[in-house]
Image (cartoon, rainbow, N blue to C red; front, side, top):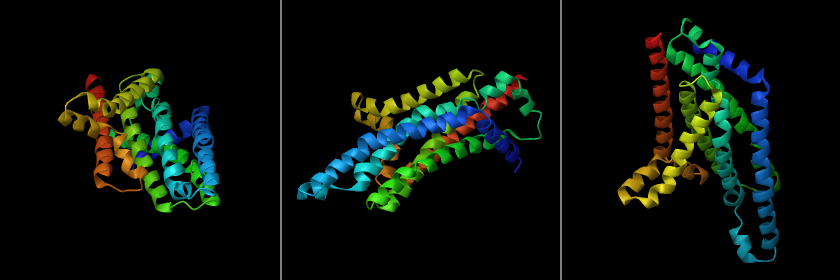
Length: 256
């Protein structure tokens, strides 16, 4: 449990500066505006049409029309929001000159990494918890199925954990937080583009690129389906970048 002091220190760092508050506020606001002016209003229009047309009444599914789109929008906003949370984790330590102090503490590298990861993931989980206001609002107005919503949030937490692990790795490579943020953006966009480029290559390579697209593995969660292949993908993806981060920390020890 030596990682707990690092965890507490990182949480304090997030909430003793305005950064976390601003990121959380902007994140919730963007998702809320997107949800209200697109998904919710479309649902209201279709609901009104359904009262006069049986075809629209059959097509009226709250989970498909509103909740699934909400999670899709969350994933896109996360792509731009989470690098702002991860950029400081190691880059700030290097810039402030406290990076070397980490190696003098009676901690193993993985304990330091675990404390930082869990602190960032806790802030992200808080952001996800606050977005529950939108499904709750829908539950007050209509009758969405709860299980697909819970599965969707599980997918969001796994996807967010994968984003954070990648962002921590990039942050461990530089002392510039801006470079860390844009480096993470770049890698995430490359992973997103892999799925789009699958149609421009052969079928076998296209399938590989499709499997490597981190967003494709979210689709089953958005449909309320728990597919162990997608869960394993996110866990392996996160482990891979945590492993690379540990190698990055070890290389610092070798260089002194």
